[in-house]
Length: 296
Image (cartoon, rainbow, N blue to C red; front, top):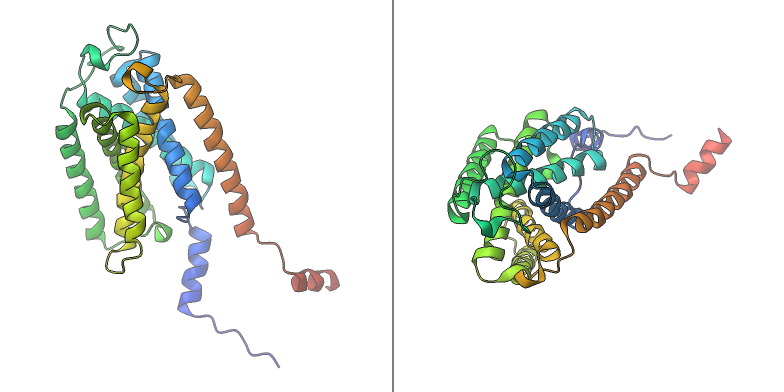
């Protein structure tokens, strides 16, 4: 006679998390998609603000509205959906690009593309500069993390299942992506490293973080958030490397063409993630289960 199964609290918690999971598992594919989305955020943000000459002010307003719309869809979803999640990541990257540019830049000709003499309607930038802008954004990000910590809720992405925790998560994502843009633009424009040099420096930082994962005293959740911030300047410098003129150290592939290729890549990755998520949610029956189903 079979013994009844013992359902522990751990089993119930695991079952609940599998049903209510709203955010993805952190895997190598996660980081590939993050870099693709943030690079696209850089090229697409520059496409609207600079190439199409809408300006940082108008583009930031439009992209923030898109961010709010995509976030509402994500928050209303009952479980993790790769298209919803990565669309919000993309919208935060695009909005972060133009918000950073608006904060740090001004109407100087060095920030204009082609033969443009102005960028859209409204102020063309606050001219704070990268150090000041980064300091403000770091302060805001620390305030968000302090408020998050005060709630007692986890920073582990796989365990974020409540509405309040997810709002804090996306607030941190928006600010971190804006901060990452400032860091990437500083490395590319002001540090003297150039676009390729900026990519190498940030890549080196990420390699160090991977090595630190083997150090037991360093919390993985801390490494995750540092890596999440650093992948944004990687995307920013990589996007500039693809799109800026050769005379400035770029490859001059253009914002439109680069954005189209990156968008196709990201959509393909999202489709693959969607297929994988469905397989995880509805796993194929084992051979024994399949035989039992046929005999029932």
